[in-house]
Image 1 (cartoon, rainbow, N blue to C red):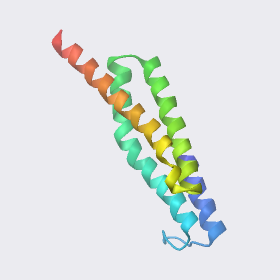
Image 2: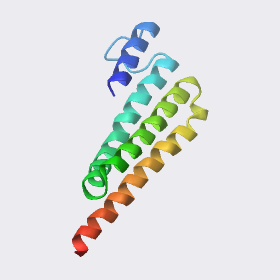
Image 3: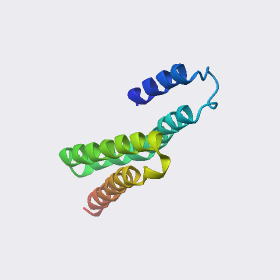
Amino acid sequence: MFANTMMVGRARGKYGVKAPAISGNEIFERTYRVQMNTIEGVLIFFPALWIYAFFIDDKGAFAIGIIWLIGRLWYGKAYVENPAKRGPGFAISSLASISAWVGGFYGVVQVLMK
């Protein structure tokens, strides 16, 4: 997330988009959207990851987290370069989120069933 903030700040300077504006240059707008989409994704992903780590396995949560991060990096790079190519990165991070939620839900149910 800090890297996204740095990228947006750098893009502001490079493309002359002065704060608080969030439009004015297409590449800046894409960079900004990557940051906002990542924040939105974190709000969905992190709670699931913590639940998974607590109720299932912290090593598995770590692996899911790495996969999610790879997907977000892929998504961000593709989105800035050509938004039409962001799909694979989005799919990878989405599958990681879904895996964390499904696994976390399974872990909670297992505890409740005991």
